[in-house]
Image (cartoon, rainbow, N blue to C red; front, side, top):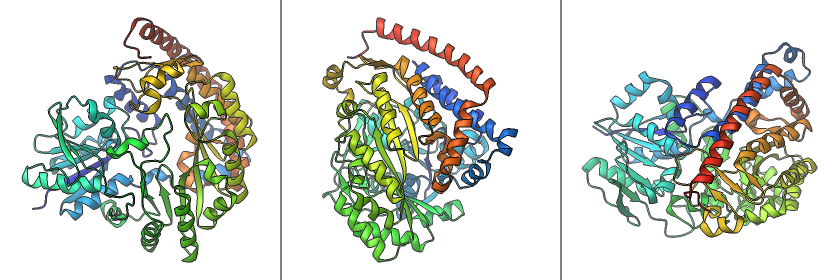
Length: 553
């Protein structure tokens, strides 16, 4: 009988969660193993306020007679992107079936919410492949993996968080094997271990042991081109889930040629080189997806627009064969500054691009090592509007060098070249090993951080701003962008972005401004809670920064 493997992906809270109170309960449970939680609580409180206000406004009498009601309902009616499986799930299922294993798939969120499902699946499982990619830290990971462990099964943990933690791993009774690197190279070795009990490193990999846990490393491919790696088979996903999918995730690169100071993506997969599939291979993979009935492709690459020659060749191939696929991707602003390239992407079926604008201040962009200017960000957004590409931008508030004045520069940039959708997030130091957290870089910027404490949002400060201010600066920028109708706040609209219609933009902007202005009782309650949480945050930061030499500078 073939071994039965359960693939578990996702995060503790997922797009499947429609009950905000249930999502809050999960978040509280995740904090039980954490310390220094007040910043995280304040950030989540501000996000919850917007989501709850939008939900209550949709239920109000004022909404029923509002001129924007039809536009909002059209937007809400689109199937959320989160209803399709994670790419990791499909990739692992494909690789495991090739090894002759029987595969079932689920998510942490489903297992956590449904004890009967959890016991039924785990009772018949010989091994669990647990992805850590969407788990925040060990405070989330440890209870999730403990939930999966049974006396009769083996738990294999891999993914982004595993890649970040392996160097300092101190063991876990819930994990039988830690897997680091390329899944395509790891799964055959792990499959052999499950069959025979003998763990042998992949041909280009190695074995280590830390904290009593064996760790297997894949090694890296021989060359820069990834065409030899197998593509995830979305027909398996459709069979496992018993339904068809209109959208598929796709990945064509590993690593990143840039070294943004806040990002760990270039260092995942136990690799530091930028590797990619060719335009010819991508076109062939997409043609197969299209023949299967897929209508949309979501490119999860750190940068799909690099190398630019590959992008242009792919677009010409898609146009030449008359592809009807629609696709979305991450893009660099400097690539989109080239209007012909942006137009070529649109003509080839691209409908949406996500751009890491991060800041409107050239000083902050230089500190981030973005290799991009505020003017290039502006020109990219203008070009997206010209050719009809929906633009999603991300902004980081609080990065070393940030002040209230530089936050206002970011507002001015976005107001001058409005994106369709914006995401504003607080600077975070929870990802260890990124360039900004190197000792010499922290010293250069006067950055002080909390280390050695399990926290979902570790405390920090620098001469321009402290973590005690950052959540309110995020809130202030969000509210300015909403009030002046610059763009749609991403966390309010993420569930329907696949079906966003620019013709409804003005109506949706009116809706979100009414959401922000309304719900006085809710806002009063949140203000009271926020004042309490903020006092606790200030006290905790002062105590830890003042008393603990454990704060690293």
